Length: 247
Image 1 (tube, rainbow, N blue to C red):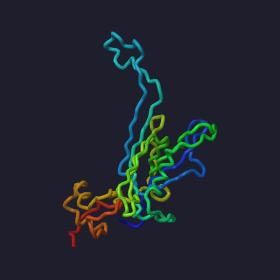
Image 2: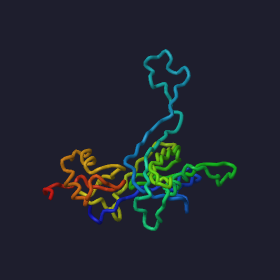
Image 3: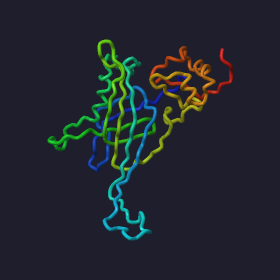
Image 4: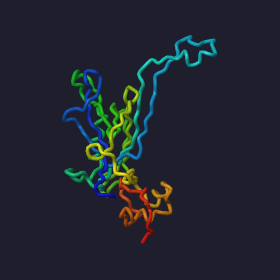
């Protein structure tokens, strides 16, 4: 992978609700850069529809004509995040021996806080999920954390978090320029890169990409000495031009 390619990391950012009911980044608010980007994002859209009482009764042709839109649309976002204390930490952050010291930063976004306008009320903070050109502003509906690996001292070392966010409107898509410097498009041939989930192998990733017979050359091109031992979140280029035979 060329050294000039920089992986854009997803972030979770605390928001505050403005007077016009629009979200905005909260000054000095909580901001979390994910350790590993999610493998996929799942969006679901819904409208609030109701059929008036007596509407369309006895009229076989009325069909959906009697149904009415009675509320704002809703968009929900679902995704998974992974955390591992053995993975390299971002620059400036110290290593930890308990994965919950990393995941508690995400739990913050579902923890109710005192309303600044009415201290007698508790409300969850607004949250923005931002990854490259994708942005989703809303509230965290639910959060599930699975602790998956423990040290001999009984400290959890790995965790998976399933997040569900929602906003009270249909998401409006805004297309932005690529993640390169000054909005320049990504260099052809360097993206997309494949992120290895926990327990993945070069053989398995190559097979999933329809290049099972090329796994040895893929491992060599990506500088991988042990194709059966990949770090969770490790990036591989599975789409390069295989023009030379393996050594």
